[in-house]
Amino acid sequence: MRIALGIQYDGAAFCGWQAQPHGKTVQDRLEHALAEFARVPLHTTVAGRTDTGVHGLGQVVHFDTDLEREAFSWVRGTNAFLPPTVSVQWAKPMPDTFHARFSAFERTYYYALYVHPVRSPMLAGRAGWIHTPLDDDAMRAAAAHLIGEHDFSSFRSSECQSKTPVKHLYQIDVRRAGHFIHFRFRANAFLHHMVRNLMGCLVAVGRGRYPADWLADVLAGRDRNLAAPTFMADGLYLAHVGYPAEFAVPPAQLGSVPWSSVWADLDPLS
Image (cartoon, rainbow, N blue to C red; front, top):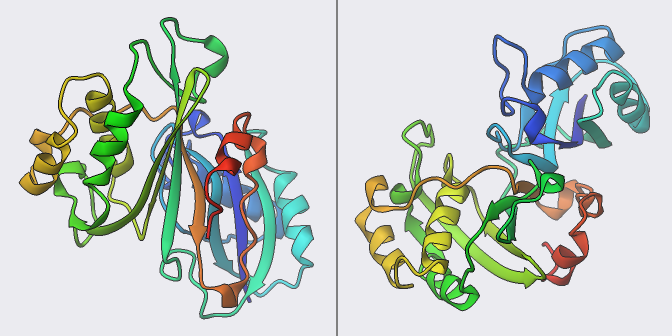
């Protein structure tokens, strides 16, 4: 039997998603909790591996098991062995044709950026921060150069293991709300550090360091050295993973973050 789980986690509490010998990752804690509940080891496959500090709101995993359990028992039973910084949101039996990673046709990330002369300790690990004003319109104009199917080598980490740098970026939204600017990135898939590298470039344009069309040159150059430094992970959230309707994957619970009302005002996630 194949079971899919929806997972939320505070990325600031972990060294990324992927299991490591030190055991301080989300996957390590989740698989430990599953083993405690099921009394047998269970290996999970994830939709997208997030880095240290990146949060999960709509992360999806699957695992195979011979155990017969009610769907919600996987939620309550696993959560009983998880720390407060990780939570299983839902569980659903799936056909063997479902794969958390390969069945997904798109991913959506949000970035919450606090723009204020003084940093807020209440937002530590929850939002990025910059002390200088930003030009929203310039960032939107720069983002327009990135939409479509491109070689995103200029925004790819040297540690990226993706087979191809070609991805299709469907959408970038830039929305201001008080002292915050909220960004949404939606693509068929992302390279390692791609969103954070895009953020670094958009912020550089927003600060007036480069014109909006500079980003078109960076994209065309296919050289990581042309782009701005990688932006901080603090405000980055994996918000949604899109699957074919036949799998009826439950939606992510975005209401668990303080600025969810701003995100809800954006176009509905598909």
